[in-house]
Image (cartoon, rainbow, N blue to C red; front, side, top):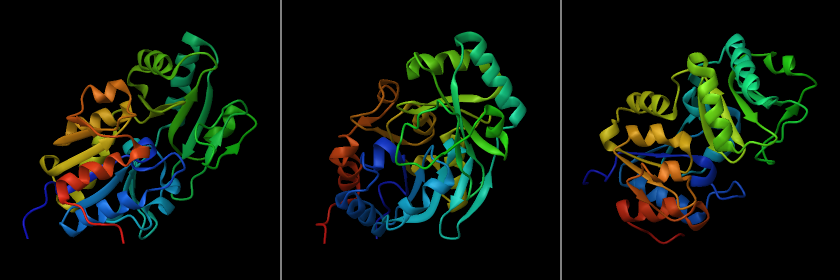
Amino acid sequence: MAAPAYALIATDLDGTLLRGDDTVSDRTRAALARAAAAGARHIVVTGRPAPRVKALLDGLGGSDGLAVCAQGAQLYDAVNDRLVWSLTLERELAEQALGKIEAEIGQVYAAVDQDGVHGRTLIEPQYLMPHPTLPAVRVDRRADLWAEPISKVLLRHPELSDDELAAVARAAVGPLASVTMSGPGTVELQPFGVTKATGLSLAAERIGVGAADTVAFGDMPNDVPMFGWAAHGVAMANAHPELKAVAAEVTSSNEDDGVAAVLERLYGREPVS
């Protein structure tokens, strides 16, 4: 059998592999299965924490049950429901970073993803979840956010756009944390230096695949480092302009099976049974 076009397929979830209703189309499942039959591996690379991906990995063709989660801070083994490794954001650094941001723009509303395979998403009273389908627990005060170790902090501002909030946060926090934007209403603080690229590179090394053999798919600025690492970066039609600017190509939207369209070109197409 000839070697596959790329040995590793790395896909973001929201806005990329998933449709707006959090489902994966039959066409996309078939394309992933065809790629797997050709010898390619598939790893999900997402901002979602580990507890929010297990159900989504079930039934994905070509998936080994591995997912890079929390913007690169976790490598999750869904088959055994365990974290292979994880990094946490220290409470003191998170509080300092929030303080510096609020000194510049006033009050922000915060949430956190707790570390671990059973970690919860905790939100302040005025924080609005950007994905209403994702479960969250509302707490009474900010101090309650730090009850357990966290992988990241999520931020919202009552007036600033995501781009504006991300720019202010980057300038304010410096080396205290890394700042990224992973979707509408989703500006995040994570351990400094952690990105999807750092997480994906470690995951790829674990399965014996390199950057030169990787094709990556995404839609938001948090996917920029991953595109810089992979040999070929594919942005969705619905992607943020910042990601499109560094993509090797732009496919159709997540609602129009953009991932499947590229995989069918690379690995061939079979009818959905």
